[in-house]
Image 1 (tube, helix red, strand yellow):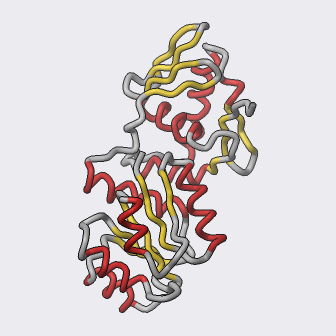
Image 2: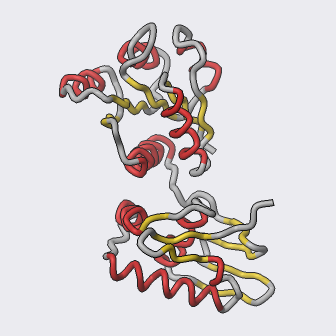
Length: 228
């Protein structure tokens, strides 16, 4: 699990970003005292930092400069301002990327994963095993097995299943699935997505799991799981 430090003073936005990133198995920490960012940085020891430009006490540029005096950790700037000089300044201070608010959350995740890959040889597929309704899913072998048997999925089918399981009990839109596939260099069209999802569901039906993949008409798809 990678540790992220989110330096954001908008509490509602902070909570939203933290909740979404935690769904991707990131450990997210925030700032309580914006005059002690470096102390918090030293305490958390993050693998990546996300900084808003407009902050109380000192702006994000100041804290980026201070962090760079201590570390080469990847840094992403967030900003609601649209001045080109903000992006130039952030890069000159040593930031690795810049995200303009408002942003699509998948864009932020893709940028985080890209920076982690470059910095730590991380891959989003680093999790190899998972259980779901008593079935064992092996992402490396592309297999799903339970008491009813074992099936082997194609790479696209397994990728789609993993995306759905990372958002269990929540609808994942068709656009989000297609974008995730494209970001992973699995080039797929809208029609091909339908074929892949239908094929995935039929394969899962062989071991009595197909009923747990739901189609939300006009919205997308959802992997269900019981909540205890």
